[in-house]
Image (cartoon, rainbow, N blue to C red; front, side, top):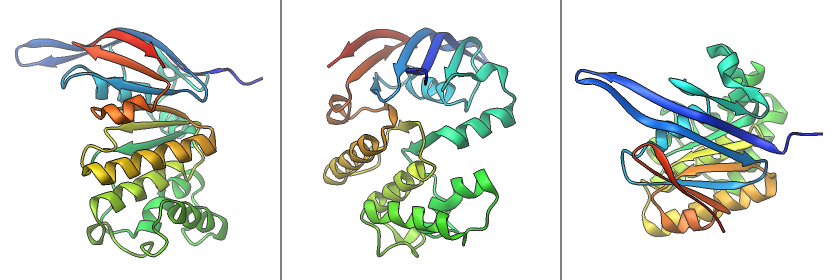
Length: 233
């Protein structure tokens, strides 16, 4: 039977050394996220939201504490091991899109599949999956365009298709609507939750967008690196 807990964080602390001494940006955060749940992490700038997201995804390592992702203790893995785990079960959507400018929309979506398998980009099954996702996000006529030829909203839709192409078990979003106008942001919110629901993916997102946080079943509020509230709708 699958573990019903997708993400388990215990007493997570992150401290950076600065010119003026140690700076603790996350303080003994403990939380669990069930498989299939939707969690928003909110709080003022500098509250530790993005740091928490990066630690949960294994993009950085904590000073103390532990992260268990999809049943695997990230602290027990090497950097390569964490990268393999991310590619196998994690999807990402970033505020600044993180698309490779020299690749087309279709080629950008294919990147996770190529990293997982080493297969050439023209492998039929992979291309079909990527094309299908780009069609789902309304970019069927933009697959051959490069990022600079796309609007901000279109670039974010490419990043969303890329996030789902590996059929991840958990999706991490860092301010996914932060660089979008209100109308485009609302369309992006609808897409995220529609795909998330259809794929049965666990969702953890950092956001300042109250409309986006209200769509989640649970909201954690950070302030000064500590959890100040944990509410379930």
